[in-house]
Image 1 (spheres, one colour):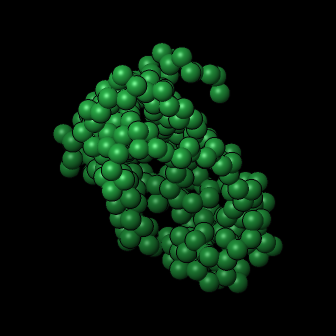
Image 2: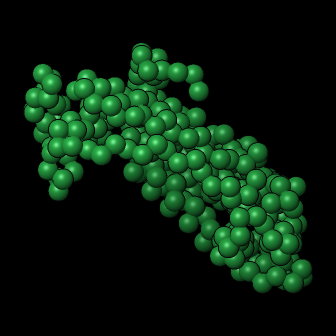
Amino acid sequence: MSATPVLDSANNLPLPLDSYLFNPEQMFTVEKAQARLGARCMARFGFSYPHSAPLQPRRGSDAPTTRRDGRYGPQNATVMAKWGYHLEGGDVGTSSAPPRPQLSQQMTAALRGSSDMTQKFGPGGQVINGRTVPNHGCVGETVKELTGAVDGRVGDAQLAEDLKFGTLLNSQHDVRTRTVFAQWSQCMKGSGFSYPDPVAAMGDKKWSDTPMPTPHEIQVATADAKCRHKANLVGVWYIVDFAYQKQAIAENAAAMAQIKTALQAQVKAATAALNGDPLRQER
C-alpha cells in the first residue's frame, strides 16, 4: 500500500495482523468450547461444574468484524455525536456468570491435577470415582484438546499479541502520524479543547465518571470527529500502522506462519468439540 487513503474510518479495512489474531467470532467459539469441555470433563468424575458460556462482548455498530479492537478509537461521527467516547448504550454493566461451586479437595484435584491449593497445576494420576485424573486435570485436558498440549496457550499467541501492541505504539510515534496529530490538536484548540492527540482525548478519565456521556463529552467527541476528518487522521494512521504490521510479519515470517496454522487448528478443534458435545445448545 503506497498512496494514503482518505478515511474517516478504517474499521472495515483489513490489517496484515488480522489473520494471525482471533477475530470476535473465532474467540467466542474457542471460549465456548473451553467452558463446555471443562464441564464435560468434570462430569466424568461425578462433579457438577457449570459451564458458564462466555458472553458476547458488547461492540459498537461500526466495530470491525475482522479484529477485536477498533485500534484508532471511535471513527463514526454520528455515533460520537450521540455517545461521545462511551460504548453505544452507555455503561449498563455486564451480566455476571453463575458463581462457581465451592471446590472440595477431590474437585480441585480433578480440575487442576493437584489438590494442593498452592500449586497451579499438578501431574494428575489420582483416581476419583473410578477414573484417573489427567495431567493438569480437566483444565489441562481441555487446553490439550484445543491446542495440542496441556500447557498450550488458548487464544492469541504471545508474539502476535506483542506485535499488535508494538506496531500500534510504533505507528503512534511515527513522524507522519505525529504530524497529523499536531494538526488535529490545533483544530481541537479552535473548538476550545486542549489535547495533544486523539489518544489523550478518548482516554480522558472524566469520561469514566458517568455511565452516560455528559454534554461536555459530546462536545469534545463531536469536535474530535470533525478534526479527524479535516486532518485525514485515520487515513494517515492506518497506512502507517499497515506498514509497521507488514514489516513485523516479514521479520518474524517463520514464527508467524506457525501462529496462523495454530490459530486455524484451534478454531477447528473448538468447532469440532462443540459439534460433538452432548451439552451443545444453540445460542
